[in-house]
Length: 294
Image 1 (cartoon, rainbow, N blue to C red):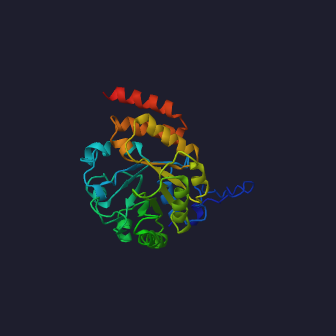
Image 2 (tube, helix red, strand yellow; image 1 turned 60 degrees about the vertical axis):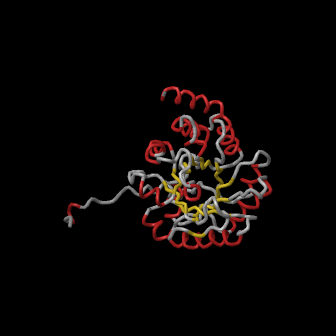
Image 3 (cartoon, rainbow, N blue to C red; image 1 turned 120 degrees about the vertical axis):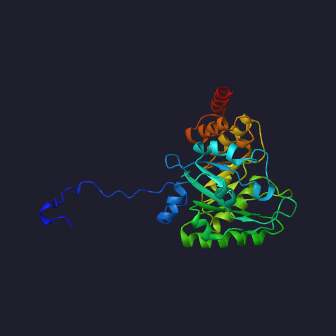
């Protein structure tokens, strides 16, 4: 206990400077609790409000996907360039170094493999395990228009309820099955339903026409799925078009880890997402870094 005589008088009250009340920049999130917003800040870069998510959760229904056969060798070296990692708890515990301090988005739904009807998913992770793993968000697949649409929506709302209880955001992933239309009208429907029912942010597919209407009509941030493997320049063009039309970033997997030079590709994607580089400028970065790595 300090002696009374040694305690200095207070004097720096800065009475001429109003108390700063910072607005949380992420769309639709200003009224959320501190812990909730802090977790979102581990997903979306505070300087830009955007994210480069590295998606490697494919194995939960596909098994060992090309490029993910050895996550320790192909993915761990990419972690310094990702804003956040989307993965399963099995991969997180077994392979991802605990020194990775950026956000983890935990795949929290699952059940059927690629051999079955994919829309028949269940919640596959207990929130207590998500807390133990210190995740930034929990991701759940939502099959709007699918055979098990209502069940998948209820999966999301149950996860939202428990996530709100513990301050963990939920990412609603809009699944697109082979029988579902991939156009702006469908994406507006699917993303809005996820947002209306409590998802903190939504992952959906980019569409060439009217994608700005998808982002404009969704009151929470949208990140785009990378989808199937594209030529590198085409993938960069897709990312660039999406962020210029209101997307808050990308959640890319195959277009990064199946690239000829994955480390170069993820850095090029960052140029588009965070630096507003043109796809052509980012592709030059990709080629330069790829050539250096040879």
